[in-house]
Image 1 (tube, helix red, strand yellow):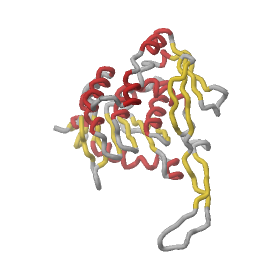
Image 2 (spheres, rainbow, N blue to C red):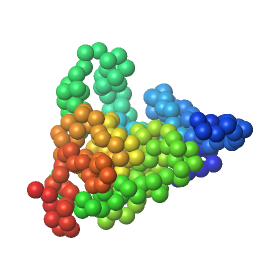
Image 3 (cartoon, rainbow, N blue to C red):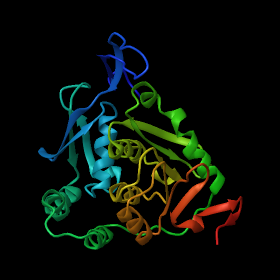
Image 4 (cartoon, helix red, strand yellow):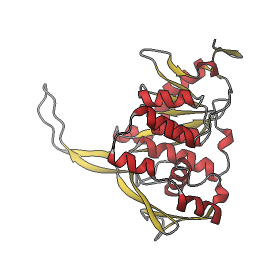
Length: 278
């Protein structure tokens, strides 16, 4: 899912304490540009992201934010002014438009002002808007660990720029469904979820692998897409663990050296095929 627009080149000189400075040479850098998402003709949000997958990005973000529940909520999803546009517009069906008009913007306002909200209150607030996931299915722990280790091979933009995050979705047989890279880890997740959401394929998802640490926002986005298992290359935040636990989600990350650190939902990770963890 990488394109020629997701990277650019600047000249950079190389220095080391043991060698003389080299002449400046071209260096690949990841592109960061704004994307404006408009809903019902009104500005909704501007995110900084890596160009590409704009429609999927907007759809995935709107699913995560509870603006849409199914692709049928969307009447139209379009780029303004052609494929090079930095603006996506969504028009909603009447019922979804009514929900959007009356939706509670309290969480967005709180995140901007930071006025007196503690972690427990934030988790309680999020939990009211999300449904816990049912038990199962089971994933072999060794398969989960291998999927984390293999993520690098799906990151050509990171290989070129050393600056991209990735989100990869796998099915229950650990076959890769889709992967996206972006300057922002939230954007990468919105893009892959948005693609499968628009294709009505969310039910195929078995687990999610992220290149980054797992924050509570990523757990929230995964919960909206009904993803039962999240695997990350870095340790999660405390709020991420608290929210995943409340929502009956499995959250595990790469352990130093080898293996997994399992924070919540360990019963989904089997030590051997067909055997759940106790």
